[in-house]
Every structure is written in C-alpha cells, then in structure tokens.
Length: 375
Picture (cartoon, one colour):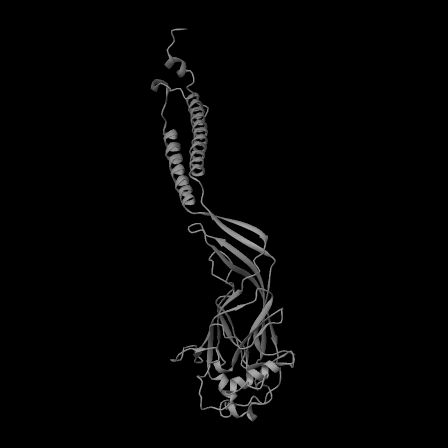
C-alpha cells in the first residue's frame, strides 16, 4: 500500500470508467438514437448561439420624473377634399397655452383630388415678415395698438393685434386687408392637402386639431371663420408619433389609417390618445432615447342632424405618470456555455434512456420469438 503510485490513487477518482470493447454491443437502434440526438444537440446549440448574439430586452416600469422637456409631435396627415389655404392647425394645452395657426416647422403640400402632388414649392405655415421700408408710414391698428408707436402695416399685423386684444375683426373694413382675402369658399373643395412636420408643446395634457377656416380666439372662445356647414373631411393619417420611432414599441399605432366620409356628410372626428412616456437604452452606445407610446380611442360624430360641434379632426392627449424603460442587455459567455452544457448533458441522458428501453424491448421480443410465443 505505501508503494502505491500516485497515478493509481488518482485512478480511483475516475467517475467515467472505460468499458472494454469486448463487453460493449453496438446496435442499429443505438446508432439511430445517437444520430438523432446529435442532430438535436447541434440544432439547439445553434439556436442558443443566435440568442446569445442578440441582446435581450428588459422592461421596467417606474414613476416618470422627466417633466421638464418639451413634447415633440410628429405628424403627417392628408386631407383629401380640402385645400391647404382653408385648413388651420391649432394646438392648446391644459395650462391655457394656445397656439393658433401653428408655425413649428409645419409644411402644407397641395394635392389634386386624386391625391397626386401639384408641382410647386410646399407652403410653410409661418407668417412672413416684410422687410422694413423707410418710405412707408405707420399703418393704423384700428384701436388695437398696445402703445403709441405700435404700427400695423400689413393685414397680418392688424389681425394679430386684434387677436391679442381678443376682439372680433371685420376684415372687409381694414385697408391693409383689401383685396387680400377675396376668395370663393367653393374653391376649398377642389383640392386636397398633405400636412407634415413637427411641433413642440408643453409636456402636459392638451390637444391639437385640423379644422377648416382661419382660427381666432375671442373672449376665451375658439372660432374658425368658414362659411360652409357641410365639410367633407376624408383623411389619412400617414404618420403620428410623440418622439422617435422604435420598431418593437407602439409608438405609431395610427400610421396608415384612412377614414372616408360620404359626400353629403359633415363629421367631427375625435381621437383620444393615452401617452405612455418611454425610455430606450441602446447597448451599442449607451445613449438614452426618450420617446412615447400611445393607445387610441376613436369617435366620430355626425353633424348633419344639427348636432353640436365643429367639423374637424381633433386629437386630445394626456400623459401617464408612469414611464416604461427598455434596456438592451447582452448575455454573458458563461451563461451561453452553461446553456450549451445543459443541452448536451440533457439530450444525451434522455437519448441513453431511450436507447436502453429500445434494446430491452427488442431483446424481449426476440426471446418470445425464439420460444414461439409470438406467431
């Protein structure tokens, strides 16, 4: 015993003793089980490798504390039967902040009734500032000036002064507006319009809408100047989102929605949006992406039976106090190796049990055949 070699002592810890070839029997059933189990192991390891190469997406829910920055609204809406000059886009929020005829990088593209664009430069929704002219005298604001030096040399300046005062205005009596607003409202239905761009509003509950006619605010009332009660507002929402687009999240559920209206109907369309702030952490650069998901409830109201309301497309939204965080996380190599070992060991164990069952069943059948108990 003292003279026992170290290799002999170490040999006692061998948990996998080798069986002599003379005592091993190779069968067709065992070969079939081996081929099938090896194929299954190769397939499962390949799938595990693909899963290892793709980062996992973890989801977390917590209270939103990022109320400081603005809410960006990306929109692309087509009105198929209303000309661009007769459409106003207005936005307002719960704090009372109202934006009439929004000018935040919004462009209007004229379309024909078939939806084809007319060849011309898109109309940017912003009031142009005329260059100063020393020869022009100070124009009257018709009582709406806020000080003695306030001049209104253009029609837009007069209208803006009246809006600030919340006064009603008679355009035909203003010298600066003569000849500018001579138009026939029948022309409104001879073209279509595609409105696209983005606007930034306060990060709180609010609304925005598309409606026919110029918009005014008089004594806390929101008014659109349009002479027709029956307005066909067939429209398509090409895109609507509140932030950057994320493929796996519901950041654009209304994209591609088309709503058709009968010829003689004037309707009011309401979209109620529930916005959920979303934070997406990309693994490749670690930069956070702030965006928003939202769900939609739609409602349309027929105004032909003297129902109260104004024809238009209205979007009302409110923000959830909770934020969803998506974070990409890559699995470790140790986790991948452990899963591969589990696959190999599990499949070979189950395959060994099946091989033993097949061999024992086959030997039992052979013995009964030799004894003549099976015909």
